[in-house]
Image (tube, helix red, strand yellow):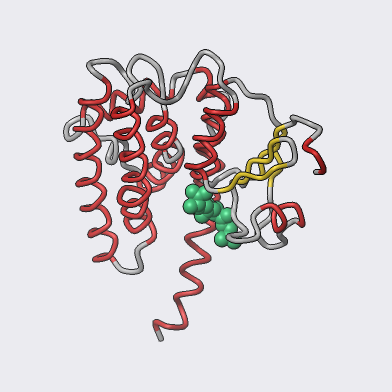
Length: 238
Ligand SMILES: N[C@@H](CCC(=O)N[C@@H](CS)C(=O)NCC(=O)O)C(=O)O
């Protein structure tokens, strides 16, 4: 958009994406109004292709006509561009660095492990994924203990950067557990009690409930993904 004459905010997303979900959580917690534009991956829109020509992925935030890509970058941008009373980051530079470290850890370790636990090709791959999920959750339990300083959230008494990044996977975790008929396996009150309480407290916030995808719809979507993956794998088994 020439000159960025409008300050309007658009979010290109896909409803089931945990990366999009974390951005929606940040916008909701910051109270930013925006237009949400659902994308079809089988027929990507010109707007998506033009605004994220490198990766062609969602989420993309468009603010005043200018695109911002990559969910972690987008959340940091949202925090800086839409100041307001509630910052998602601590004031102290060291604590900000720690928050960025744990956000990166969630992407590099936890999300990869939960993906492998759910979608691994063999039972061995899945159980290795589960093992790595538990290890990552234990590390995050320690991080929550340190960062929260005895309060409910990584951000202390209010949700911050790490909370929204981790919050992006909550709906998926609930859906996968509903599919497997096991509740509280990932946010397990016996293994990681602080994180289990965190999941309840974070999920109960109005700003979070307002944008949380429906778990039933998520289960249906995950079942379709599972059948598609099984159909793809079937010829190779012969
Ligand atoms: N590192 C990216 C990951 C984004 C991503 O993987 N988005 C997926 C949806 S979950 C996507 O757009 N996939 C479309 C495609 O691969 O064609 C971020 O954090 O924003």
